[in-house]
Length: 360
Image (cartoon, rainbow, N blue to C red; front, side, top):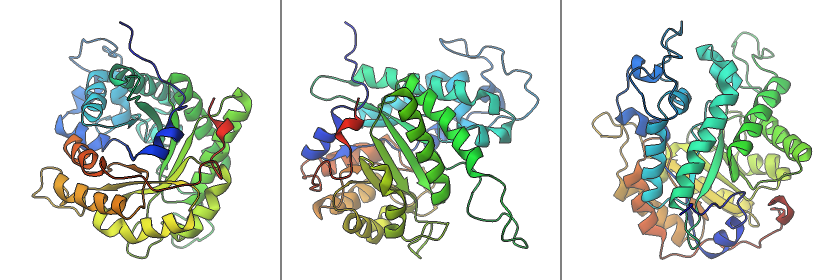
């Protein structure tokens, strides 16, 4: 029997009206569990379907740590991670594309592989979601667009405040390429995440809208910033409220925060965002707390602690989408799912910012 195939996110707004949706946890944390070496990242010794064979055996640069490459060399690992999160109760899984832009891949001399990485990653997530989808519980592919390792707003040279190592146009072009491949590979939603520089995010949003205009297709959009410390600001200096007002023109399905802080420290900023954006769904996927070398995940918030804190967010009526970032695992997602399942989602006057016509 052919798996049920739900694409393009038609059902998401209705789901968010009814209940809290669950996003998956950390891809990198799960990859680390496999303890892969340089040879494994190159795909040496893997003979399963979809592998790269000897394609990268003699690549002149070290590639260990290039997690996005694994979608080409070890698709079995990426597929297993997606399926573990889906089995734990995730409604949405992120593609393995956080660093799959030409800008980020230039660090490995693999910029020319960015398109292929995005297409392959989207297809792996699509296959996993189709496998777990049922008519009563569709699963969605969230095409992940990370911030890139460069910033358009901040000088890399302390002696030259005007210096920049990236332009808006370079960011736009890289993001356009990524969006095109994610959508064509099967993404249902686009997720611009871990935003530390709003100008970088604006380049991504510009590229997304440009692709939508050219293709005639629109997907729901989730925008997620990251508060980097107790100042309550993203790295480029904006408060959570100012950040929202800078990106609200994109009319996202949801806006939220992720990464940087654990759930315990994220509460006041989620409260601020929920107040600033009363007519938009709110997402929240914190990391697993502060660094802790004695912990299995490297962070100090166990699944029980993280889920209890997120349950408090839900009980307060702050969130519509919850999940996990760095350090979180399927165990965290399962605990979060169980914790929020009995609770109602944050009420939103649907359609004020999110355009109904945006869902193809």
